[in-house]
Length: 410
Length: 228
Image (tube, rainbow over all chains, first blue to last red; front, side, top):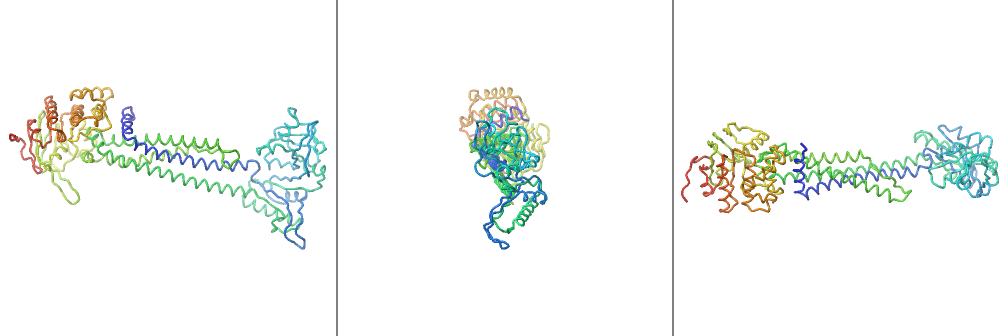
């Protein structure tokens, strides 16, 4: 059926109708191209947002203390809310659904870190062992902090890879002593982090040790926890409960907007995910619209093409062409044009996406646009089938009429 | 070769019914060269279309080469046409985007012949109509007479038993018409039954028998041409 002769016939007729063939091909190529670019952009947008969230656990609740701004139970506004270890323990043991929890204690002033003759300023974070999960810290050497470190106030530290590079050069750091504001800590591990270079310039020490060594008493600066796979509604309830507990403990109104900030990242992530989903749906609708326009274009041109060729069809029939061979001739031509054009649109669309991926600045909200090849091929198949259907009806009609009628048409 | 018995044919357009052929009886022997004459609307083109299986008829019977041609499917008609009949049209009906050789080779394509044999046969028949040198030219690059000769080559290439020519000289000047008719005479002398539909006396005069149609009836199946 698809021998060389048939191809020759098809190529001949395509060549004889260059403009028409080009227009058919163009509407197909354009439809596929737009679909690919749109879908790819949708995916790129999603990737961009995911990238922005890559650093920290997204199923987390962060608690920041502030200052009261409304009078409550006879107390004046303007009081500082100071969280303590007891608050941490209360949330950790009292709120149901907390998976990992850590507090942070902030050391005042700049922190000098020295190893032998190398001194530099780094960011020191005093945390609980669970902090590992909250920041998605990756231990590359040694270990992270553990509960015993906190209980026994051990002077141990886990350093970022850039800290290691700066202080130790090629020397293995685990087991070595560093001085943090004059206090000696033993390095027990090295970590990496996907959050960028700043994250790698940090040093983690046990929160209890830091409170004792740097005059923190029982004060903490921030509580953070993950919520496991709790539902969004559940995490909202958890955030409310935490707020209520701390309000009771520190005697401020839960309606005071400044006293305490309980940030539920679950909600933020869900909101942004919702936006992305909306954009993707929109993109799909626009893409399908473009595809539909392509289908209409192909159908239209096939209708005209068959009409234009009625006389030729009559001649071919007079020379002994069967209706079947006429229908096949037209359909194969349609398939050939739409496949080649569809493929061209596909390649072009993917090319544009690749270019966009390369040229766009790092860290923007658009990243790694890509398109599901299955979807692209389905779209192409749809267009080809549409071209077939559009060609089939008039082709069959033209093939079925008595040649005398076909020959009479001008 | 072919025989018609009480052939009726009418066209229905809207409410009107146009009775084009009325009980036509006709007998044409193998090897004859016959012309069908008649005024416009006498039904001669319709007759020719029915003979060529390009159109169907309402009642009666038509036998071609001993087989009854009735209620044929389009596919069956196509097969019979490609085996038995060659066509020459007034407006040549060459396919405009194909060269002379490709046009001539087309019937053989539908017969399923290989490429090489098609090409060889096409050149042979172009040679016979004196257009071997024009094989690579498209119809638009040729004169009317040349196009009609290509069309005749195309009609003959599949070695039909019957050649039907509908006003083959209608679009040509008298000198070219004469050439075309001589070519058809030559074809006939090789054993092909030739039937020419025409309204030109000169053309009819070059056939051996004239059938006169009038208002859808055979007025005279063996008419003599009045001297010019």
